[in-house]
Length: 464
Image: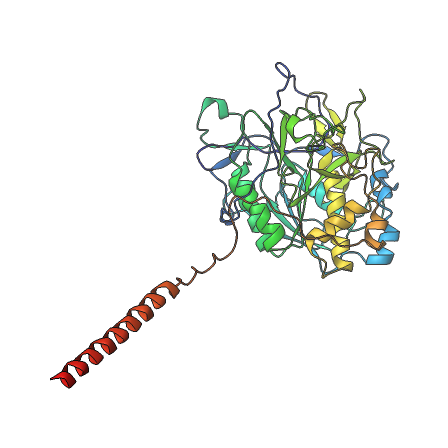
């Protein structure tokens, strides 16, 4: 990255115990990010630096008491049969996943590799974290006998781009403080976004988050440019997880400030930037709700989602199901501290449900621009009490309404760019009128002077 290394991007996979904070988090007055449209990085796959696997791949399985044949509650919320009646199942739409990779298996028949930013030469079709494969199953998993799981858009094509992993570390960390850093940086994410955009994906899902304290900013120039490139230049619907408060460094942000006319969504009180979500001109950020459409909370009643003025909508994200490398149903990942399976919950999976919905909208309305797809999802959501807030944005999604309601289009969103984009205007033709007038005036004077001299000469000759 330019001058300053970003911290690792942790994949957001499940609810965990929040790390203790030293002192209270501090806010700094920030505003929506400014984007340099000409800073788009190269999208060639490959890590920023050599990586190696340091930990065993995560074990997964079914939690005791799970009924495999039951439809997951989060999936039932989506009302898939109604969606498919009106929009089909996503045929002809491609969805890129920038994640921990995806294992090919029988439940993901339309999967192809899109590149690897963790290990050089990889194709994105490995998933040591068991995260990207679950996200893929939620978006486009096919049905199978014996369980109730099926993806939102099971006929959509999936493109897997591996960009992060908690199981891999740098071969040679640059400093002692970075010895625990894992694979995935803001820089590699920016390049992965470009790769996804260039793959032809109509939807890009990013179930990964980097939480950045506002008092310790990192350079996100290339990431902002890459997101704009994907959303504007390539017309991709970009969906991202808002982040989980249980993850390291993800201190909660305050809600909206209804008393402020200038800053009602309270950018000025933000303590934690959630990236890529905070690039809200180009990204639809998704927080987690329960299966009744209320903001998801943990056992202590605390919001599991990182809020912020960039949050667009909420979607179900509790106790989801996925598949493993063999295509078998899973609903838990192994927790080494308790030596047991922990349920899979979080905003990662909420984003996956919204990406699946976006794929269905693009299948039904193939000529609808990306920002209008996002507008349909926002405008048909069930608004919170404040109409829009920092917990679930414009509200919890209503998939059937997003596909079928008559939603008026909106103007192209106004961009906050650091410099104009596109060809520079040709230099103006110089104004030659003063010079022409001067020449004409000089010539006129010369003619008049010549006439006067001629008349004078004729007068002298007559007198002589």
